[in-house]
Length: 525
Image 1 (cartoon, rainbow, N blue to C red):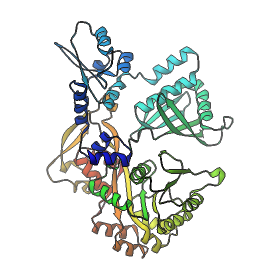
Image 2: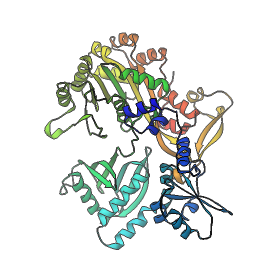
Image 3: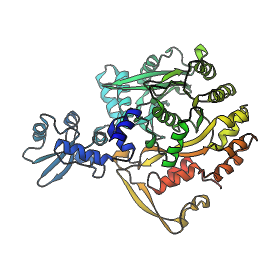
């Protein structure tokens, strides 16, 4: 408990979150302990998921008011579960719904209760038609419904795509786009104008791309969104990037890092100066990894300053600067001013050009810990690319601590995961086959259920590739090496590829082989 309390203080999380992230407590044990506190049994909604028909037997307004789910039905009575069994009038209200039936009340975790409320959601088209029939404020109410759905399905992006007859609304969930609904074009102009006004864009501009940001507030929840409007031949398309709504505490242990990688990263971040680079394409979780690291480093005795485009996550105690082209505040100019602000730790959102790379390397050399992201396909490619930008080899060799490459893969849904037996000989690619023993191997898949919208996947985790800069690697950097030379040396120093990290997650039932092959290539050597 002392260790958990200390960790919770450092990471600014609850003690229960800290216990879970350290593997000292599982969510089920937390649920059982809380149920014991309420003096009721515990119902695990993960392993015993009620059917849609079962959930809908409790009216939506009652279910959401009292946060209750019908857990089980038997001849002798029913069991209803809630995340607050101490509520007044709970039994009275349930008795009206189920007269002359014995009702037992149990406890379930809040997130499991919320997951079952998805059954009450009607299609967007159904809700759009109800709003339109009222003939009142159509645009705000339609946007409200779309935003509410995006939060329920944990969408990272919302797309409004005008077509000849209607406008398609699509959500990107766990990295994959799917259609959420359609609306008539006659209502789209008002929706477009509302998004433009809330995002600070010009409503009289229809032929140029525009960017902005808006905030969606619902009850105690405030969600920031980055807005982009671009002209297409069918009309103006809107894309909203949902920022920071689902980031749970930025805990390193929850990102998918192996224990060895986590220790390596924490050790590198404890050094008084140096450079930690995270590489990967847009949307691969680079910023989240760096902020998880910042959370550990964020102490009262250190000055942390960031320059980002945009500032995606607002963190208490961290000085965050937003790049602004209108005032000529670029990464390079902002970084120059940050160095004069007496920082201990600097986070640069992205190294995009030679000037930013040079200032970043010099800042890391002059007693600052510098965290940054960089666009490269893998960890080994980042070093030659930085050298090609004009970074001096001797400066890079003496400042670089670790290079990380990452991708996001979808996780198998916990509710419907099941094991499958696979014959290794049926794996077509010899590059993939060599990672499995001959004969039969046990892998896992999701059957598809209401909790995962019948996709078999829910949530994402990262696969990683680490290159630690040992003295031998420093000597190699001085020789302006190729990507292949860097990876060959990293291999000798026990580095493993992203694909190999992914294979471990496939074998342990976190993701599927198909999902891994979607985002990463099997290495040749």
